[in-house]
Length: 365
Image (tube, rainbow, N blue to C red; front, side, top):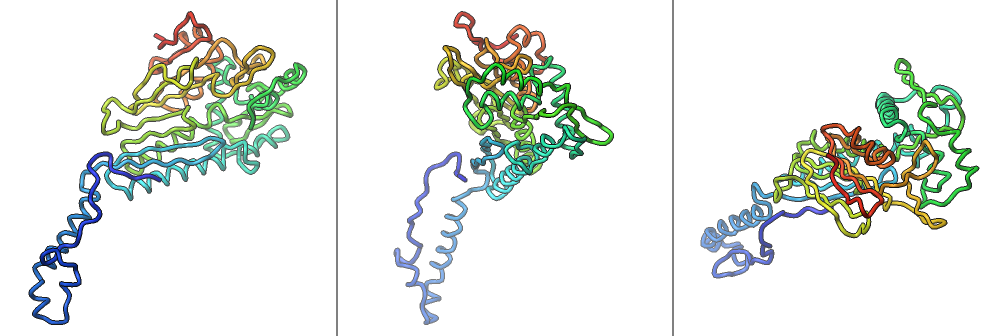
């Protein structure tokens, strides 16, 4: 964890204690009363000097910056916070990471003991009762699936595994394996009972994958925890692809400056945005991909075909909530530029990059 002043000059930590004519402190200590009385004024100056030095290390009103990161749900989450009270800042950041660790116990498909994994194991056998929080999240996932016409599909798990993108960088599967996986994919096979708060799959092999929504949900929850603990200026990121900016940093009133990578050259940026109480999520084919038989296959699947989406390089979505920006970045990527322009909510901003050099990246109108 790093805590440092955001401005100000380095202070001299090697000042000599004040005493008579620069004498060391032990010169002011004597068993004889007359010597103690003689040096009493210098003792007062010495104590005053200590107070000044202590106050100078963190003067009232001085803005501090604190940064911290942690791993959860197969991603790295980071927080940068500005404030004046280091103790309160550290407590708020620790509480936010406690929250993401709690979500890891509930949502991670890497943890066999998580509530999400329990659903994947047993929901094809019988209805599985889930917590209110997970039920609300799964309900939102099915709503995203319907509105995106199946381009977002929470049941894409079998495809991610057959293509090698689950805990891997991908490989080209046999067509028969893709066809077999497709029989287990489809949000229509996931049934929720709002009265009993249960989840049920109507066929074996269905497997939910939180990869398209988990980071966004976690970032929003971390933001809520920070705000609840009095934080008014912070940047929260999940793997750098799902980001939320609270307020604005001291040196930039427009908000947190975020670079959008150039998909043709990810080492450079293509444009910048400022996030002020807003989120941004990016889906790009340059994030995780492999080459086979002269083609590039990225990890962003079209659940309706069983193959990685083609024709798009990257999509960045700015929205009031990170769960929305992350969830919609996938179907915008999959469905293409025209579909995105026709289905973009007014409160969203979308930066679109097609896989065509004659079509420059641009903000959709």
